[in-house]
Amino acid sequence: MDKVEGRKHAASDVGFAPKMFCNICPGVKATAFCVDCHEYLCTDCTGYHQRLTLTKMHSLLMGHEFPSVIPPKLLADKTEVIRKCPDHPNEKIKFYCQGHSALCCVACNVLSHEQCTKTYIPDIAEDFKNGPEFNKLNTDIQDSDKRIEDSLSEIDNCLKAVGTLKADEMDVFGKYRVKIIEYLDRREKELQAEIQHIHDQDVAFLLELQTQLKTRQSELKMMREKLKSHDKNSSELFIAAKRACSQLAQLQSSLQEITEKIGYRQYSMMKDPRMETILQDNTGAATVDQIYGKICLSRILY
Image (tube, rainbow, N blue to C red; front, side):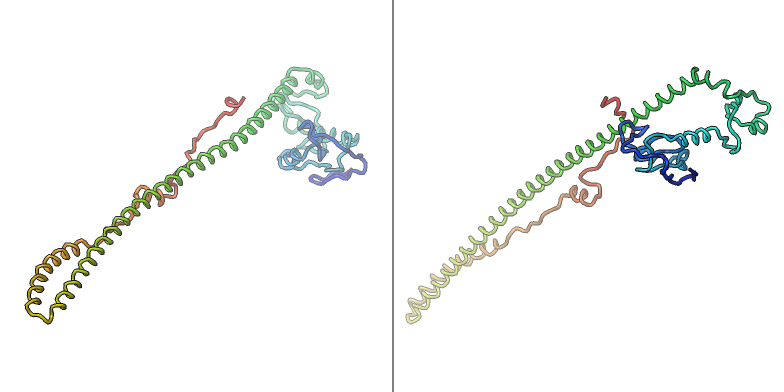
């Protein structure tokens, strides 16, 4: 099987897996197999694998092509890859330079580490496997994995808290909006009632003046008719006219008082300058007060 970096492998010699699980996420169905890492990967891990600098050029067997078991040929390829010197591809890593903490091939020894203290890897590999350094490495890996799991759990809690916070604050604003509308509705009714009261008073006052004027108008009509009825008798006309003069003086005085009262109260709604300021302000009514800083949910939710 010839490998080309970044290319999917054919699987004619590897068999099929009806259902394999991700080596990184327990219980999650695998959808790919990394030839270089010899690991089954789920969809999420495959995405990370294809983006990370260290693994994005690895060869993947995808979907139904990945094997149900790791083929011997791939195991041999894996051995070759891990032992190959990155600086000298035709050479295998055989030595370890303690001074530089570097893995070396024969070419590295000659070109870069000739004066260094080196150890032949097969001579120390078994002791290393059973020694404290390898144990510490495994412990550190487990600790890092636990830290990642704890951090992922904290992120899940943060996501829940963010959603809850949004819902709570939207509910607060919704209730605040209802209070504002209720306040405006109440003030509208109060102002309408005040305007209606002024209107009713002015209408009643003008109607009363109208009645008084019509009464005076009737009195004038009667005065003209009485004078006309004595038109043929000069003596009676004289008496009626003198009486009419006295009555007319009183009527004119009353008429003067009435006409001086004609009118109505002018009014207009004065807008509250505080409300006008809020309406003109794009951030009026309410604002979102952001509290900067990290909230440690592990201290709150755990």
